[in-house]
Image 1 (cartoon, rainbow, N blue to C red):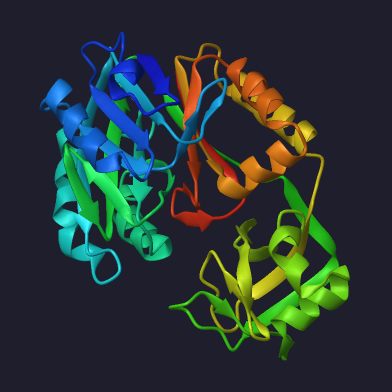
Image 2: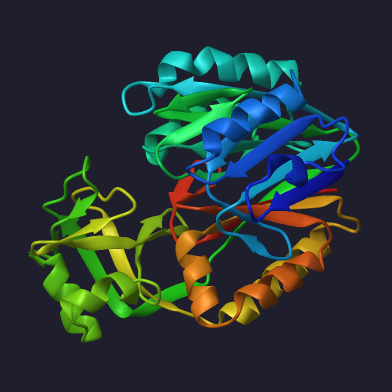
Length: 351
């Protein structure tokens, strides 16, 4: 298979797709103002080609912040794309579409990946999708776009998740998740007074969540939303930890980017040596793959901001580029199989 990535920092779609011929799947990552226009133009340029899209920044060797990025797979793949609607109400209502598409590409664990772009309610969406994927042990990589809109096959949807199944006809695929945080000391909490709908974390061990966070890290209320770059929360999920970012202060509570439930066990995390972690991820991928056709990744917006503030983003993209053809999306939440995480990187590698 081959991966194409084209971009235009000015938002010129024709510039972004220059040189793209015979795509078998297209992924659009556009800016808020031009998204709908780009979706229509892309469908007109490549009618009938399976496609998914969202509003967000993209990258290959550099980041496209305001323009448009187009990623496409050509040669040696089978692909299908569609959408689950009403994701805040009942995404399972549309599950037959997933079941049909899994069968259509004859998906298997070794050579197939599901890639999704979501408008929100990610945890519920992933539970729904994975109820189908787990039957064949199909992996999933994806993320949340901006402004509550996604596209699939040339149409715009709100309150939806656009998905694509990609089957590599000439080799294997594998999904990865990278965590640059580790447990901070012995801070362990039981969450309470949560609001699942608003992602509110009210209390930790019976005390104000805001106050607990401030007292441990010695930060002012204004500093909380940037301190989360270094010290997010982590939710224990089996033998893994799902990162939970703080969005804002809500009275004595904290509003998060991921749902927290009463009685969830949380821990406080701290930033590790992210350069070393990235190198370890690259080495792991190289051990698993003797030859690589493409890498598609989703990096959290907060990772992008952290790396940029520390003048590391360009170096990071160069390091990932050593694997081969690497491109991806800057997301507002990352998806890895059935898990919705923050401040992480997820990716899929194609042999």
